[in-house]
Image (spheres, rainbow, N blue to C red):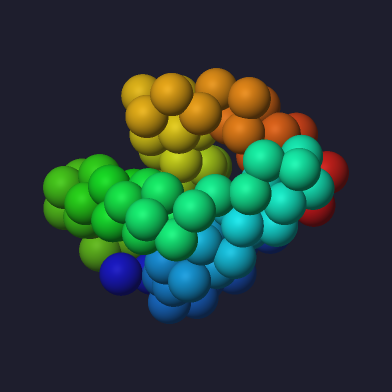
Amino acid sequence: MKVIKRDGRTQEFDIEKIKLTLEKVSDELNEPFTKSDIDNMTREIYKAILSMGKEYIHSFEIHRIVVEQLKAAGFAHIAQAYDDYQRKH
């Protein structure tokens, strides 16, 4: 699957990028994810993205899915921080 970035470039989808960002955001909040939490979150995010069945996906769609999955798992505070972090970068 290819990701269409904000500037129009495309690159291969890499769940590790999402995982690293989630770890960074949760660490910055002094609310680090456990290994189990991060593994569960990335698995659910990956499943949600794949279920869309797209060959190309926009980065904003991935962003929305990550925020939704974090909120659904009870990590609303981290979802907000992730949202803020992504808007700055």
